[in-house]
Length: 345
Image (cartoon, rainbow, N blue to C red; front, top):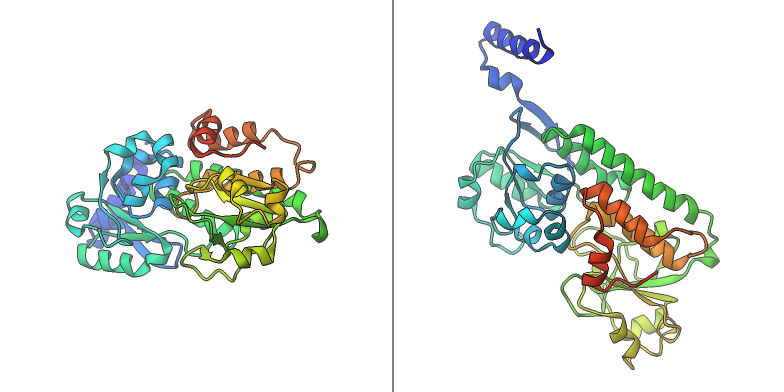
C-alpha cells in the first residue's frame, strides 16, 4: 500500500471511529506571523492576497497559479509585473488600505484562504468573521532577517511548497550573512553617513527613509534613522535638516520619480558634500513592503557603492543571480537598470 493511500485510509478509519467528518480531521492548524491560530483546509488551491509582500512570496514559491485575487498594490508592483506577467489576468479586489476592498468580490472568488499584511490584523479578523474564510497575517515589523522569513515559513506550509520555501529562506539568510560578515569588520569611522530619499512613484525628494536595516547591513550610517514603530518607513524633512546632516552619500529610491541629475543640478542641493563630490546614486528599492529579491540586492547594492574594495564582485552579475534564485527569471538586472535608472556601480 502506498504511503498516501495509507494516510487516507488512516484518516477515514479515525473519522469512522470518532464519528467525525474526515475532512475536519484532515484540516491543518497554522500559527501566522502575528500569533493568530487559524484552521485551514488540507489542500489550499485557491488563495487571495491582500498584501504585495505575500503576493511576491507566493510567486517566488512557484505558487502563482493558486492566486485568484490580489490587492491593487500587487497589481501595480513593477517587479511583480515583470517576473509574473500573468498577474494582469488576476482579479483585482481593491485594497483595504485605500478603502476600495470589495467584500462581495472576495466572497465570489471562493478562496480557501486570504493573506493579509501583519499590520492589518483587524482586517483579517473582520473578513474571517464576516465571510467565514480563513485569513493569515504575514509579518508586521521587520527588524531581523528572521522577521521577514516568517512569511516564507508560514506560506510555504499552507500552499504545499515547504521544500522550495526552505531553499529560498536559506539563500536569503546566507546572502545577508555574507554581506554582514564583511561590514562587521568595518570600523565606525570608515562607515559613510548617508541618507536615502524618495518613495515609489513619487517625486518628493524630502521623504527620507528611516528604516536602517539595509544600510546597517551594508556598513553605513543612516542619518535619517528613527525608532521604527510600524506605519510609514519614511518621514518628510526640510532641506535645512538635510544640510545639517550634510551626508557623505545620497541614495535615491529606485522606484521614485527622482533622478540623479535632478539632485546634482539643483542649486538647493549643491551646498551638500555628497552633491559637490557627485556621490548621488539611484539604487534598487521595492514598491511597498519588502520584495524578497530586493531584500538581498539592496544591501549588496549599498555595500558595493559604499565599500567597493571590500565587495569585489560584479554587481550586475550578482543581481541577476539573486533575481533568478528568487523568481526563476534570468537577465533582469539590465531590464530594471534601464527601466528605473539604477546607477552603474
